[in-house]
Image 1: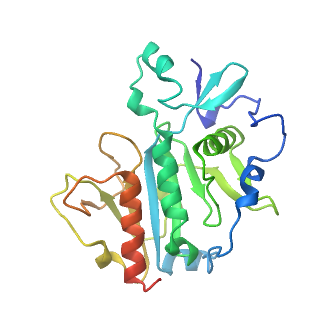
Image 2 (image 1 turned 45 degrees about the vertical axis):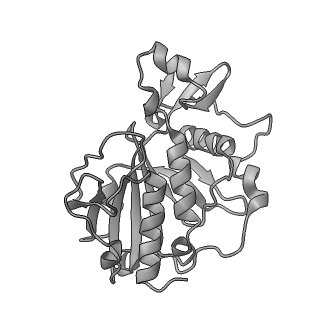
Length: 252
């Protein structure tokens, strides 16, 4: 089992099938109308414009050599390899990240241009997701997309030079608006809140754990809150965050 992170990527590139095209062409036919509007571009807009920023922490995105190709490490497909090398099977759950990204980027909040998403993997790779990115509907296509992203460090749009996904420099705090609120989410928090109270003018950051088990421990959050009295999956947490801000900002 050969594991790689994006900082030590091999020069070879895995492409689904024999096509040597950008992987976004695999789902280009599924493009929809209603792309995000009013995306902040200037530094002033990014620091002052109201928007929700979601950071998916501890995302399980890791490539593995399988024969002549590379695949996204997944507990369903690579259970034997994980067990052989003493890895926790629950640590290879890229499907959680897939579910979260679909919930976030398909939301009306994102279509309104009021959402920004970052991924921070368990292997310390930081990824910026452009709001106009359409996540592949099927998990296999998503895996192929993530393999190319981790090896090539960026994914371009089919109709132009825009980078829909790109690996960026750590730490994530360097890419956040100046002075914005940074809030962690945890079911074990003593403070259970209605998320709508954070839907005010200006940007706000929420950190969500994109892993099967455990707790996110990062030093940049100001405090942690629970958004429900019951344990929630990462995808449902993302959905509830988007819904709360849509209601608070009057987005239908």
